[in-house]
Image 1: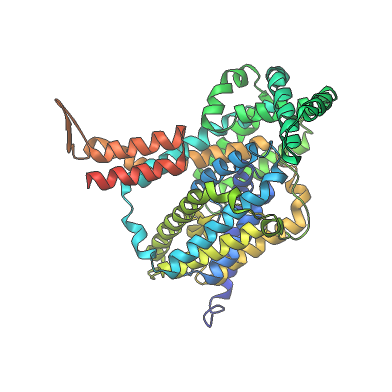
Image 2: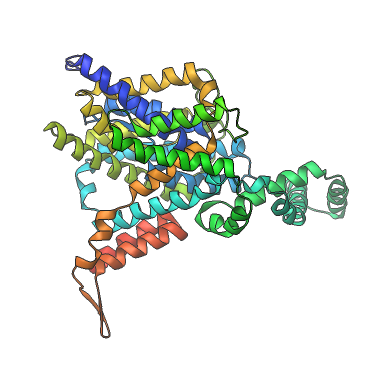
Length: 474
């Protein structure tokens, strides 16, 4: 702490720049997660501040990242689906899992396990990162073309019989939970079933349509319908965003192209009064803790997701410590891995309590901070404060950002996060496996198994299976 103000000017510039760079990504990751832009912004505020304050890497800028958001997205989607599509109902359980992930990270640091993270096999990490990129790319196709399943009247209508069946089942379950079922209960359920409103059926049908279109498999499932119903304005906004992000980098890297794209495309949409689809409204005022995490806590609600929380903790640890190594190389310093994990865990725990999505050390934001003059923990704390000021002062304006612009930003994130180094190395890797006359590389096999399982099945289990296979081949 005594060195906190030794580089005030540099840390101020570094923190402000990193905070501005983090803004569009925080909003985009929040939307992508399923909890909305405010959850991404809260994550960027609290993780940046507290991970910097308690962490072990002086120049680290932390916040929501692509890998953490991808795992969170699967968890959030599953819990919302199991809570009748009601985000508010699912939120306490979601945030409890995030809180548990933060506690696991603190434990990893306290038990001195930070130094062992680097021993996770590279093929597992490579396959996982490439899968993250593929998942983000595919899941952003629908918002980029302006297709939202719940707004597709024809698709929603297909689910009305199923919706009515689900509503009737819920009525019957409610009757049975109140007392032992007797004939009168069935009769009561039938009477209630007769007065189910069209609004109730429509709401349930929209939930089912959304569920059908969620994730990679869901996106591919409804893609033909989406391509038949392209909203050309939304597509142009997304393409314009992508063009600016890649094009502006060729002019200068002094100003983050992501921010330029966000400001330019939003300004065009507003100035020309375009009839675009905006992001969810960002609530004004200081973020408040969600006390339902504690008041409505049920161990049975989160038991199935403990492994997910552990995966988030380990993934955040890997993500952060890799960024710490990059920071060390740039600043010629040495980070403290266990202290860094404790800092990240505290940041993620506090973020969960305030309703934000989890995150980790972010390489691009950390590099931007260092290049702008950041040298101490103060820079990361300032980045969090800058985002808080933006939230408090510009929340209503940020709520006018087109959803397609954030989809465009995420598409470039998906392209950038894939492990091209690992993919390019495939032809050169030693072929140490033989099945009949054909020889394979065990590393390539692991990489592709993790990539395919992560993309089309389950991110959490894919990593576990990859680690088991890697240990067998080692």
